[in-house]
Amino acid sequence: MRIQTGWLLACFLTGALCAGPANGFGLTLGGVSGSQGGVTSSGLSLGGDAQFAANDAWSLNPFLMVSFESISGSTRKVSDNMGGVQFRRWFGPVYVGPQLFFHDRLFSGGGSVQSSQYGPGVGAVVGWEGAGGFSVGAQVDALEGQFLNSGDRRNAVRAYVGYRWR
Amino acid sequence: MPRPLAVLPCLLLPLLLQAEEPADPGLLKTLAGRAQEELRGSSVTLGAGYIQGTFKATKAGTPGNAQLTDNGKANLLLDYQGREKALARVPMKNGAFLLGWNLTATAGQFTADRQLVNSAFTGTNLGTSVKGQYAAVAPSLFLRMGPLYPGTEIYWSFGAGLGVAAAKYQGTAQFGGSAGPVLNASPGGGVKPALFETAFWQLDLGHWVVVFNSKYFLIRDANFSSTSYEVYGLSAGYRITF
Image (cartoon, rainbow over all chains, first blue to last red; front, side, top):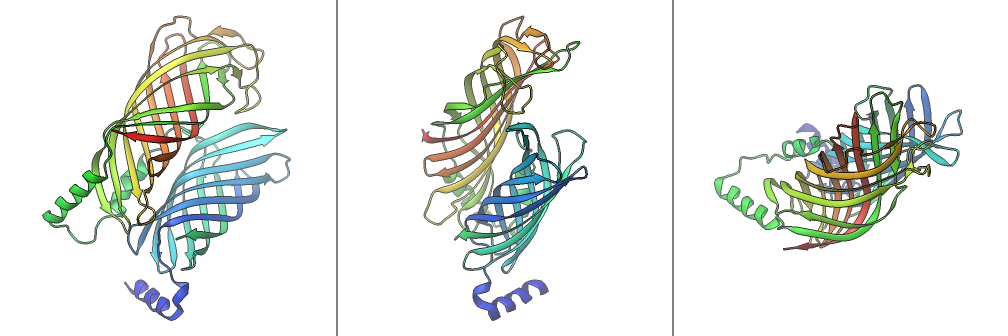
């Protein structure tokens, strides 16, 4: 309650900066850094989502994300593709919450996709979305492994800017 | 490739969207009435898309496995959805979150004639080929939210189902890579029972739909340790409700 009161006061003082959840399609563009079994990769992250506001405090965001990454010390590439749902808890224009997703990670080299790993993953998301539709955000994608396999799992961080058509 | 997603989100969502105050019986009746209005009758979706199907088999005593794919192809979309039943409805800022179930049915045929040897997706022509047909039915749990914008019919939905299928196939498959033995893919012939899993991720724009769909068949075949066929793809179509 104290936090919500604080945000209401901040919204009153800063006006346009405060948004809260509003429905609409959104796109994000940013960077990603991942690690799996000591092997690291980094690159570009693209995403899209649809935001469905349940009320002023919660929204559900089904999302799709892709990445284009280079593996450190290797000519191989990796693309981590995800589809899932984020459960966002809003405090004024700021949100935080968990996410559940399914990923399909493609390893390529020599002109072809050499292998893939797919399965469920979990994570967390945090961000800010202004009334004008612009946003910044970051998320942790954790425990991405092969379906029903206990091998090495990937953990990654994505940071991005975005825009939502409200 | 992606197997059907777990239905965990479906189970979590109603908990997160609980109304803060207890609803009175009149309100519950109203909500039930709205849920009925939002439910769809039986429908058939016709369209086209791009899919990739892969046949897999392992056999005890035979090295490695056999994986044949079609390398991806354009495909017609033809799916039947039964009348929807509501399990829960939670009002949202626009519209509602609806949890429900229905019966889905599908049928199709496939030709997988490229062996996966050095690539997870792109097969090589080794002269082997498996052709088959399938028919499947499954009760599916789905959730649908929307509309996304007031006054529009833009909805997002997600669902997964588990059911039964019948499959029939014939041809040859090479086991253990390009140097392994070539075996008859269905020495006994005949129709075989299968476990059927399906999942979809769909955007509705009025009667038009854009859907990512995956179907997985775990086929019971006494000639092999395990046999499966999986197909996934992105399609667009028009839904006819009746």
